[in-house]
Image (cartoon, rainbow, N blue to C red; front, top):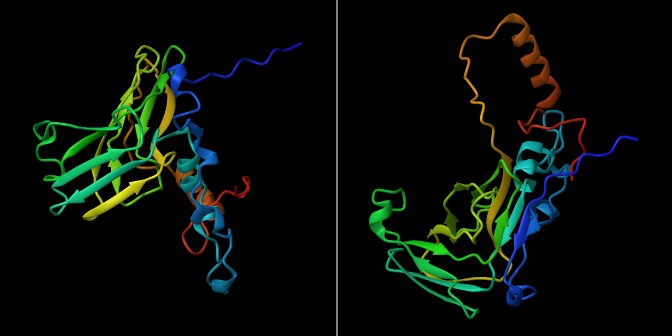
Length: 235
């Protein structure tokens, strides 16, 4: 009998006192925003001879980006008070430990959010992956919240065994913004590192490659520009 090879495991651990108190990680596929869940795969209101009515819910690249990996949520509710045209940020939280701290502005001088103070969300989950695996941490993809944006980073979580904190900029308008406990903070995408470098080949396509490109394009592009895959059903 053939034995199934065990799947790689990503492990999230916290201090015993925090279990059941802080918001837990969840698979990204179970954390789709309400607007996307309510969106129909086909909008009958715009159906015509030149418009299929397909919505972004049939765009598998968009959906796959949203559902890849895990969502690490805010451990508890956070209040971000943005003022003075975004140049000042005052924070509060409903937790007995620090949830937000500040970065020195000199560390990111000249960044696209120049003038807005760099800050850091504190995380209380230690993330462990198998040997040879790292994690890419990004702002939750296709989930803009209009209040903050987390900076992307890669950590070798097979050797770094401590909670990782996440730098961010408050990008919202002046005012008090309340981010509830469990709101998406960062998307965690595990990937296997490969010691073999990938080399790039840059050239003009050959006739067989052109034919394959045109075949794929005709099979997967709808008339309104959204990409779809006929072999996979919308989720």
